[in-house]
Image 1: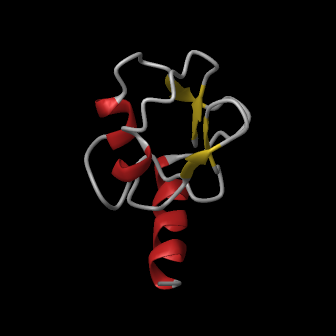
Image 2: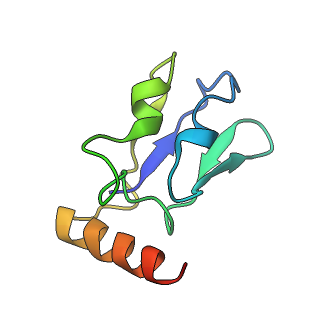
Length: 83
């Protein structure tokens, strides 16, 4: 699954620089995660770094973008191969 930032986001700016895929950006109201770039840090880290640093725990699994570990790894390899 890709991750999702809920409307509890306080725009503290700590998640964006932690994303190794550049999937997090400032949206109209709060930060947003691009599900096409989010791998939950699979291929980079053991845990999702944005979730680790979020002070208000507003980053959840996106129910609209369910993906298996294998799918996340394949997405990571696609993204990494494009660099």
